[in-house]
Image (tube, rainbow, N blue to C red; front, side, top):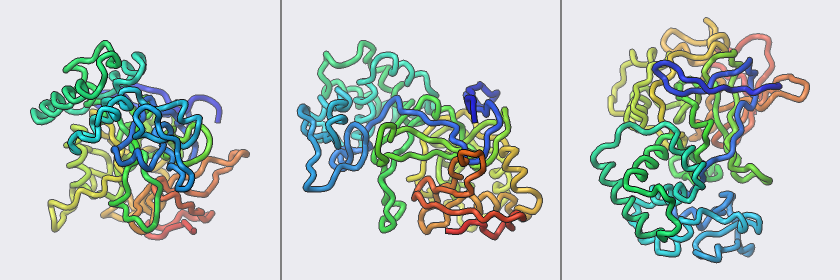
Length: 389
């Protein structure tokens, strides 16, 4: 469809958000955006992924091209070798970054990459939402990290604004605005062992608020050929009316109420009062502690408040016959939660066909499974899936 799909807005009590700028149809790509910042998740990932595009490095005997400066990073192609990787990170790798304590390495990788940004990009990064006020322990950690950056980076490469105040400000942006780019899905690897290959920050996608019944979800296609493989792609789960807020889930949709609330309060500083949470808050569990859920699906952002209802398209889609009295949103899980064992990704429709018809094919944003939706005249019962492999 023609025309920009999203517009930014400030919503009372919710902060910045993205709204539908027009009618959005099921499966439509409503956002495709390159990262402003891209950095490895760990030093170990440097051995497996290209340090420029984060595609999987070719297996032996196809030797990847090593960075001529630090020799620790590698590139999958001459083009990526020419693009290189963040200059401060490269310098730190030459200065024995590997000797830094494991507990600090992920944050150091972020800071060294962020401080390598050109000034306009660094300012844009600093304009994003921040994490809740840091604890004293986090403030102490930021001071330690600042000193480590100072010792690892050559002074002439540090930006003019480098200071003990800027480092914690940057760290607050990373914690709440970074998206995980995951390792390739492999059926033989349990979900809890699937790791993040890199983290990325996207300026517009960072405005997407959380909802426990989202109307959109995001995909990454890191190993696809061609340019733009680290772009984030956001697709509509169902029709979204003009003016409605577009939301994603910050973690796997199957997490139970207590686990969702705990994570949102600890990491993002709010309690969710969306329609689903209001229903589930009345449920009783034998185990109040529960598990933390699986955090491999987590998408890290900071938002001042949670969604306060589901999208009209979802309400219409569920209908009065779409669920039961105890869990009126069960149709959402039948249609949009991947049923592959140990996956729990989100199923989103593929984009509409060139003639405008809906695809009726759903793709999982975790395992990549494609499922065909049966085209029935009658809406399926809440406990009956209309998907076929």
